[in-house]
Amino acid sequence: MAKDRGAVLAVRAAVRKVVDYREVDVTDGAWWRRYAMLIRELARDTDREVVSTFVAYHQAALAGAASAEGREHHQKALLEVTQEYLGLLAPWNAQSKEERASQQMAEMRAKWAAQYGDPSDPEVQRKIQETVEQMKREAAAAQDTSWQDDDEQMARRMVKHYRRKQGSK
Image (cartoon, rainbow, N blue to C red; front, side, top):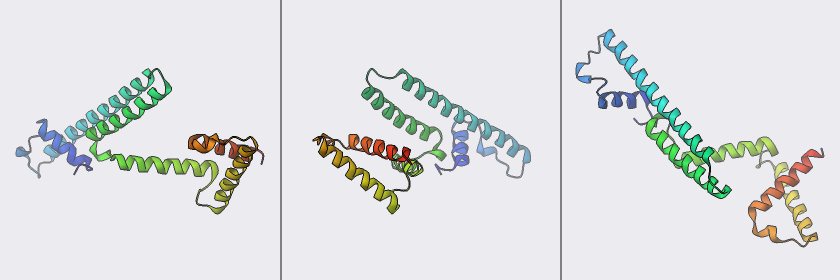
């Protein structure tokens, strides 16, 4: 029921005493027209609350924090809280934390594939492996092995190297 917007709005209408279901006459067209109008307005109220939540999120994100780390932490936390709140306001659109993570991974994969190619494609895997080997050779030549301890730095170098190779084509 939580994913059915009409059902959620019908329950909210009863709880808020907007609609008294004891007076229902399913054969009365006027009752159904009034009911549809009230449910539409409840839906608009919910949509306004959703927009208000987005505004609050963006205001807080713009206010930021003193450091980049603090800002990133607060933005992630605020986004999670905002998602939970939106799930309460509009349960028919709600996603669990796992569903949101899965959706984000799918979006990241799609962006990667659009930028560099499908990672499951043997040709792309070969290019990635070539990039890794080239980076290892460069690091060994410079006697710089610190990148091995920092996956994020290694990923940045891979992307930078791959982009250089893409630009030379």
